[in-house]
Image (cartoon, rainbow, N blue to C red):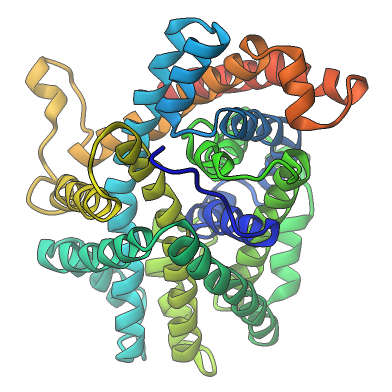
Length: 453
């Protein structure tokens, strides 16, 4: 890195890490996956996977980041040159950066949807809306490249302004305000949903485990979401950990982040599903649950328009606290490997990501019947966006997770691990190493093989 950066305090570091992990994936994706996969059966496996698999993997990622104190490619280069690790591990650097770039290229588009729906809620567009009209509003947004490009561009502009301001003056300050505010608002949304919705039905759906709903597919989806929601393999928390001071505990930090992330997932469920059941909507609403199902509930609820405004504001906050750290991972690399100033690196990366986002935007309208793999004789109905999503989420992230587990579990010396984790050289260390060496790779391999099918 050009200069050694450090978080101002352990509290701000934790808030930033929590804001990164507890993003839209933990609100939007968790709720619709829970709705599609049996509710409590999914939730039960998700939290077990979070504690037993995702947490050890994230500890491994943060361990590497703080030990090396570089960008992700810089960490890999240092391990090879200083610690004598296999040169093959250098491959993880570009894998992580490409994965982050691709994720951001469509994540910004989804964040733009939140901004657009926040604006629609402010205008009162959800008043007296029914299911058909809600689907039409959603379709109108997807069919308008101009709307999606403008909204994603606005979101990228906000993100780049924050990141260009620096780790302490930009990222810390924004996360330090928005993350606690988001938690407070989300708790308020849950309280309101409890008064106007069917909380008993929501609790039964989310908390009452039913063995008959537990299938192999539910297990795979829940385990995959546990890894995805913590961003295991992306290298983002490796960058965050590179700025950690030595006195901060990696293990306590990871457990705090994971607990907060799980707490947000539960809050999201109890802010949405009471409304779903109260107004006779379908919990298995898929990705459109937030955009097509909930607006119908807003139109019937007391103060429903206000609820909609606040909910999409919370989702926008969640997106921003995640994108600023995702972008920081790319900017850290550019600062380390080029002569670009921080501002030039940030705005240049932001522009490149926005332009790459055109592919996602056009995949919902102008290119929605374009299937690139057919050019190579492969019978596939995946659009360009679906290919990007598949490559990032189903290939690069699992492979990245496997590599992180391999590096931390097998390449780092025992003395380095003991020094960084500060958990002694006894049972806790042996359990962690067993999880990272065996359980995490096996789980990731099973998820990887399953999603290829």
